[in-house]
Image 1 (tube, rainbow, N blue to C red):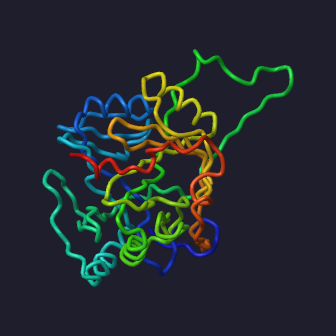
Image 2: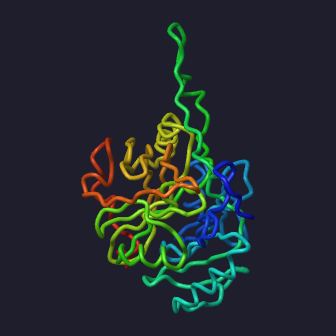
Image 3: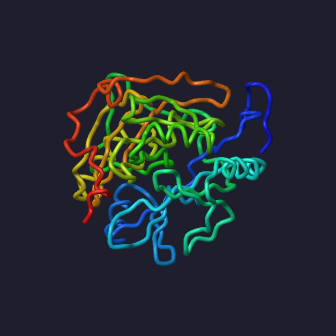
Length: 320
Protein backbone atom coordinates (compact mmCIF):
# COMPACT_ATOMS: atom_id res chain seq x y z
CA UNK A 1 0.00 0.00 0.00
CA UNK A 2 1.42 3.35 -1.03
CA UNK A 3 1.25 6.56 0.92
CA UNK A 4 -1.15 9.07 -0.57
CA UNK A 5 -0.51 12.77 -0.14
CA UNK A 6 -3.16 15.21 0.95
CA UNK A 7 -5.76 14.81 3.66
CA UNK A 8 -8.40 12.97 1.66
CA UNK A 9 -7.91 9.23 1.37
CA UNK A 10 -4.63 8.99 3.25
CA UNK A 11 -3.98 5.34 4.05
CA UNK A 12 -0.45 5.53 5.40
CA UNK A 13 1.57 8.14 7.23
CA UNK A 14 4.35 8.95 4.75
CA UNK A 15 7.97 8.61 5.77
CA UNK A 16 7.27 6.92 9.12
CA UNK A 17 7.66 3.31 10.15
CA UNK A 18 5.30 1.42 12.40
CA UNK A 19 2.77 -1.37 12.68
CA UNK A 20 -0.74 -0.55 11.48
CA UNK A 21 -2.93 -3.12 13.29
CA UNK A 22 -3.31 -5.65 16.03
CA UNK A 23 -3.92 -8.54 13.63
CA UNK A 24 -4.72 -11.35 16.07
CA UNK A 25 -3.77 -12.87 19.41
CA UNK A 26 -3.53 -16.35 20.86
CA UNK A 27 -4.45 -17.66 24.28
CA UNK A 28 -4.49 -21.06 25.97
CA UNK A 29 -7.25 -22.03 28.42
CA UNK A 30 -7.98 -25.10 30.55
CA UNK A 31 -11.20 -26.10 28.73
CA UNK A 32 -12.01 -25.31 25.10
CA UNK A 33 -15.67 -26.30 25.50
CA UNK A 34 -16.09 -23.66 28.22
CA UNK A 35 -14.36 -21.13 25.95
CA UNK A 36 -16.62 -22.05 23.05
CA UNK A 37 -19.73 -21.54 25.18
CA UNK A 38 -18.51 -18.19 26.53
CA UNK A 39 -17.46 -16.60 23.24
CA UNK A 40 -20.49 -17.97 21.36
CA UNK A 41 -22.74 -16.37 23.97
CA UNK A 42 -20.74 -13.15 23.59
CA UNK A 43 -21.75 -13.01 19.93
CA UNK A 44 -18.64 -14.21 18.12
CA UNK A 45 -18.38 -16.75 15.32
CA UNK A 46 -16.46 -19.57 17.05
CA UNK A 47 -14.99 -22.12 14.66
CA UNK A 48 -13.26 -25.40 15.41
CA UNK A 49 -9.82 -25.31 13.79
CA UNK A 50 -7.58 -28.33 14.20
CA UNK A 51 -7.24 -28.98 17.91
CA UNK A 52 -8.21 -25.43 18.83
CA UNK A 53 -10.72 -22.65 18.18
CA UNK A 54 -10.70 -19.60 15.95
CA UNK A 55 -12.75 -16.53 16.88
CA UNK A 56 -14.26 -14.46 14.09
CA UNK A 57 -16.89 -11.76 13.79
CA UNK A 58 -19.90 -12.69 11.69
CA UNK A 59 -19.56 -11.76 8.03
CA UNK A 60 -15.74 -11.69 8.12
CA UNK A 61 -13.08 -14.30 7.45
CA UNK A 62 -10.52 -12.48 9.55
CA UNK A 63 -9.50 -14.51 12.60
CA UNK A 64 -9.19 -12.11 15.52
CA UNK A 65 -8.27 -14.63 18.19
CA UNK A 66 -7.23 -18.26 18.47
CA UNK A 67 -7.37 -20.60 21.44
CA UNK A 68 -5.73 -23.87 22.39
CA UNK A 69 -6.11 -26.04 25.46
CA UNK A 70 -3.61 -26.25 28.28
CA UNK A 71 -3.71 -26.81 32.03
CA UNK A 72 -3.87 -23.09 32.81
CA UNK A 73 -5.01 -19.88 31.16
CA UNK A 74 -2.24 -17.84 29.57
CA UNK A 75 -1.84 -15.16 26.95
CA UNK A 76 0.37 -16.90 24.40
CA UNK A 77 1.30 -14.20 21.90
CA UNK A 78 0.30 -10.98 20.12
CA UNK A 79 0.45 -10.63 16.35
CA UNK A 80 0.93 -7.16 14.84
CA UNK A 81 0.61 -6.32 11.14
CA UNK A 82 2.68 -4.05 8.88
CA UNK A 83 2.47 -2.93 5.27
CA UNK A 84 4.52 -5.09 2.90
CA UNK A 85 7.06 -2.39 2.08
CA UNK A 86 7.66 -1.79 5.80
CA UNK A 87 8.43 -5.37 6.77
CA UNK A 88 12.16 -5.46 6.01
CA UNK A 89 12.84 -1.96 7.40
CA UNK A 90 11.04 -2.76 10.65
CA UNK A 91 12.87 -6.08 10.88
CA UNK A 92 16.19 -4.23 10.55
CA UNK A 93 15.12 -1.77 13.23
CA UNK A 94 14.13 -4.57 15.60
CA UNK A 95 17.49 -6.27 15.10
CA UNK A 96 19.35 -2.96 15.49
CA UNK A 97 17.72 -2.57 18.91
CA UNK A 98 19.37 -5.83 19.99
CA UNK A 99 16.11 -7.80 20.05
CA UNK A 100 16.70 -11.51 19.43
CA UNK A 101 14.66 -12.92 16.55
CA UNK A 102 13.42 -16.45 17.20
CA UNK A 103 11.60 -19.27 15.41
CA UNK A 104 7.82 -19.37 15.32
CA UNK A 105 6.28 -21.42 18.12
CA UNK A 106 5.59 -25.04 17.42
CA UNK A 107 2.37 -25.49 15.45
CA UNK A 108 2.33 -21.97 13.96
CA UNK A 109 3.11 -21.41 10.29
CA UNK A 110 4.38 -17.89 9.83
CA UNK A 111 6.25 -15.71 7.38
CA UNK A 112 6.67 -13.09 10.08
CA UNK A 113 9.32 -12.45 12.71
CA UNK A 114 9.01 -13.51 16.33
CA UNK A 115 10.57 -12.09 19.49
CA UNK A 116 9.82 -11.35 23.13
CA UNK A 117 9.29 -7.90 24.55
CA UNK A 118 11.51 -7.16 27.58
CA UNK A 119 8.82 -8.42 29.96
CA UNK A 120 8.16 -11.85 28.46
CA UNK A 121 5.29 -11.25 26.02
CA UNK A 122 5.80 -13.12 22.74
CA UNK A 123 5.23 -10.98 19.64
CA UNK A 124 4.85 -11.69 15.96
CA UNK A 125 5.22 -8.99 13.29
CA UNK A 126 3.96 -9.94 9.84
CA UNK A 127 2.64 -8.53 6.59
CA UNK A 128 -1.16 -8.44 6.62
CA UNK A 129 -4.06 -6.25 5.53
CA UNK A 130 -4.92 -3.31 7.73
CA UNK A 131 -7.72 -4.20 10.14
CA UNK A 132 -7.56 -1.01 12.20
CA UNK A 133 -10.39 1.19 10.93
CA UNK A 134 -9.66 3.86 8.34
CA UNK A 135 -12.05 6.27 10.07
CA UNK A 136 -14.05 6.49 13.27
CA UNK A 137 -16.63 3.71 13.41
CA UNK A 138 -20.34 4.54 13.15
CA UNK A 139 -22.11 5.09 16.45
CA UNK A 140 -25.89 4.97 16.50
CA UNK A 141 -28.41 6.28 18.99
CA UNK A 142 -32.03 6.04 17.93
CA UNK A 143 -35.09 7.91 19.05
CA UNK A 144 -38.65 8.07 17.73
CA UNK A 145 -41.29 10.81 17.56
CA UNK A 146 -44.05 11.04 20.15
CA UNK A 147 -46.82 8.50 19.72
CA UNK A 148 -44.51 5.68 18.71
CA UNK A 149 -42.87 2.89 20.70
CA UNK A 150 -39.10 3.32 20.80
CA UNK A 151 -38.07 -0.16 21.92
CA UNK A 152 -38.68 -3.68 20.74
CA UNK A 153 -39.82 -6.49 23.02
CA UNK A 154 -37.07 -8.28 24.85
CA UNK A 155 -38.26 -11.59 23.41
CA UNK A 156 -37.59 -10.20 19.92
CA UNK A 157 -34.18 -8.67 20.65
CA UNK A 158 -31.50 -9.80 18.18
CA UNK A 159 -28.24 -11.32 19.37
CA UNK A 160 -25.50 -8.73 19.71
CA UNK A 161 -22.65 -9.53 17.35
CA UNK A 162 -19.48 -7.42 17.66
CA UNK A 163 -18.07 -5.90 14.48
CA UNK A 164 -14.35 -6.32 15.16
CA UNK A 165 -11.67 -6.68 17.79
CA UNK A 166 -10.99 -3.17 19.08
CA UNK A 167 -8.02 -3.53 21.45
CA UNK A 168 -6.29 -5.51 24.19
CA UNK A 169 -5.22 -4.47 27.67
CA UNK A 170 -2.13 -6.37 28.79
CA UNK A 171 -0.68 -6.60 32.28
CA UNK A 172 3.01 -5.74 32.55
CA UNK A 173 5.51 -5.22 35.37
CA UNK A 174 6.80 -2.03 33.70
CA UNK A 175 4.37 0.38 32.04
CA UNK A 176 7.00 3.02 31.29
CA UNK A 177 9.25 0.35 29.84
CA UNK A 178 6.41 -0.72 27.54
CA UNK A 179 5.99 2.86 26.32
CA UNK A 180 9.68 2.99 25.44
CA UNK A 181 9.86 -0.45 23.81
CA UNK A 182 6.66 -0.40 21.78
CA UNK A 183 7.23 3.12 20.50
CA UNK A 184 10.91 2.63 19.68
CA UNK A 185 10.68 -0.88 18.22
CA UNK A 186 7.16 -1.12 16.75
CA UNK A 187 6.42 2.53 16.05
CA UNK A 188 3.35 2.78 18.25
CA UNK A 189 2.59 6.16 19.81
CA UNK A 190 1.50 7.05 23.28
CA UNK A 191 -2.09 8.28 23.41
CA UNK A 192 -2.46 8.87 27.15
CA UNK A 193 -1.21 7.51 30.46
CA UNK A 194 -1.66 7.71 34.20
CA UNK A 195 1.83 7.80 35.65
CA UNK A 196 3.42 4.36 35.71
CA UNK A 197 0.06 2.66 36.31
CA UNK A 198 -1.47 2.44 32.84
CA UNK A 199 -0.82 3.63 29.29
CA UNK A 200 -2.71 3.56 25.98
CA UNK A 201 -0.97 3.30 22.58
CA UNK A 202 -2.18 3.77 19.01
CA UNK A 203 -0.98 2.94 15.51
CA UNK A 204 0.45 5.76 13.38
CA UNK A 205 -1.46 4.89 10.20
CA UNK A 206 -4.95 5.66 11.52
CA UNK A 207 -6.18 3.88 14.61
CA UNK A 208 -8.53 3.97 17.55
CA UNK A 209 -7.28 5.84 20.63
CA UNK A 210 -5.62 2.56 21.59
CA UNK A 211 -5.12 -0.74 19.88
CA UNK A 212 -3.10 -1.96 22.86
CA UNK A 213 -2.85 -0.75 26.44
CA UNK A 214 -0.66 -1.79 29.38
CA UNK A 215 -1.52 -1.89 33.08
CA UNK A 216 0.92 -2.42 35.93
CA UNK A 217 1.01 -5.84 37.57
CA UNK A 218 3.53 -8.30 38.94
CA UNK A 219 3.68 -10.26 35.67
CA UNK A 220 2.39 -10.28 32.08
CA UNK A 221 -1.15 -11.42 31.36
CA UNK A 222 -4.36 -10.54 29.54
CA UNK A 223 -6.69 -8.17 31.36
CA UNK A 224 -9.30 -7.86 28.61
CA UNK A 225 -10.06 -8.06 24.95
CA UNK A 226 -12.40 -5.34 23.67
CA UNK A 227 -14.95 -5.78 20.89
CA UNK A 228 -16.58 -2.93 18.98
CA UNK A 229 -20.37 -2.63 18.70
CA UNK A 230 -22.54 0.07 17.20
CA UNK A 231 -24.09 1.82 20.17
CA UNK A 232 -25.09 1.93 23.83
CA UNK A 233 -28.17 -0.18 23.16
CA UNK A 234 -25.98 -2.98 21.80
CA UNK A 235 -23.78 -2.78 24.89
CA UNK A 236 -26.81 -3.17 27.15
CA UNK A 237 -28.27 -5.98 25.05
CA UNK A 238 -24.90 -7.73 25.08
CA UNK A 239 -24.72 -7.56 28.86
CA UNK A 240 -28.25 -8.99 29.06
CA UNK A 241 -27.56 -11.83 26.64
CA UNK A 242 -24.46 -12.82 28.62
CA UNK A 243 -26.36 -12.70 31.93
CA UNK A 244 -29.06 -14.90 30.40
CA UNK A 245 -26.35 -17.49 29.67
CA UNK A 246 -25.01 -17.35 33.24
CA UNK A 247 -22.17 -14.87 32.66
CA UNK A 248 -23.39 -12.07 34.91
CA UNK A 249 -20.14 -11.02 36.62
CA UNK A 250 -18.51 -7.92 35.23
CA UNK A 251 -18.50 -4.14 35.28
CA UNK A 252 -20.65 -1.58 33.46
CA UNK A 253 -22.53 0.13 31.93
CA UNK A 254 -20.20 3.11 32.01
CA UNK A 255 -18.07 5.52 30.01
CA UNK A 256 -14.30 5.67 30.06
CA UNK A 257 -12.30 8.89 30.24
CA UNK A 258 -9.19 7.90 28.27
CA UNK A 259 -10.56 6.69 24.96
CA UNK A 260 -14.05 7.98 25.83
CA UNK A 261 -15.76 4.71 24.87
CA UNK A 262 -18.92 3.38 26.47
CA UNK A 263 -18.35 -0.05 28.00
CA UNK A 264 -19.58 -3.15 29.68
CA UNK A 265 -17.08 -5.81 30.76
CA UNK A 266 -18.06 -9.47 31.14
CA UNK A 267 -15.82 -11.62 33.32
CA UNK A 268 -14.73 -14.79 31.57
CA UNK A 269 -14.32 -18.16 33.32
CA UNK A 270 -10.58 -17.53 33.90
CA UNK A 271 -10.68 -14.09 35.52
CA UNK A 272 -10.04 -11.86 32.52
CA UNK A 273 -12.70 -9.88 30.66
CA UNK A 274 -14.34 -9.39 27.30
CA UNK A 275 -15.59 -5.85 26.74
CA UNK A 276 -18.46 -4.56 24.64
CA UNK A 277 -17.21 -1.13 23.51
CA UNK A 278 -18.71 1.70 21.46
CA UNK A 279 -17.70 5.17 20.27
CA UNK A 280 -14.00 5.08 21.18
CA UNK A 281 -11.92 8.14 20.23
CA UNK A 282 -10.22 7.87 16.84
CA UNK A 283 -6.80 9.22 15.78
CA UNK A 284 -6.64 9.87 12.02
CA UNK A 285 -3.49 9.13 10.05
CA UNK A 286 -2.74 12.84 9.58
CA UNK A 287 -3.35 13.84 13.22
CA UNK A 288 -0.77 14.12 16.00
CA UNK A 289 -2.60 13.30 19.23
CA UNK A 290 -1.42 15.27 22.25
CA UNK A 291 -0.74 12.66 24.91
CA UNK A 292 -1.70 13.48 28.48
CA UNK A 293 -0.65 12.15 31.88
CA UNK A 294 -3.73 12.00 34.10
CA UNK A 295 -4.26 11.35 37.80
CA UNK A 296 -5.80 8.02 38.77
CA UNK A 297 -9.30 9.39 39.34
CA UNK A 298 -9.33 10.77 35.78
CA UNK A 299 -7.92 7.70 34.08
CA UNK A 300 -10.59 5.01 34.45
CA UNK A 301 -14.21 6.09 34.05
CA UNK A 302 -16.36 9.19 33.78
CA UNK A 303 -19.52 7.51 35.06
CA UNK A 304 -20.77 4.03 35.84
CA UNK A 305 -21.14 1.67 38.79
CA UNK A 306 -18.42 1.32 41.38
CA UNK A 307 -15.51 -0.56 39.91
CA UNK A 308 -15.45 -4.29 40.67
CA UNK A 309 -13.08 -5.10 43.55
CA UNK A 310 -11.07 -7.66 41.59
CA UNK A 311 -11.19 -5.77 38.28
CA UNK A 312 -7.45 -5.15 38.26
CA UNK A 313 -6.38 -8.55 39.61
CA UNK A 314 -4.00 -10.42 37.31
CA UNK A 315 -5.25 -13.98 37.69
CA UNK A 316 -2.62 -15.27 35.26
CA UNK A 317 0.03 -14.32 37.80
CA UNK A 318 -1.85 -15.98 40.67
CA UNK A 319 -2.41 -19.46 39.28
CA UNK A 320 -0.88 -22.35 41.17
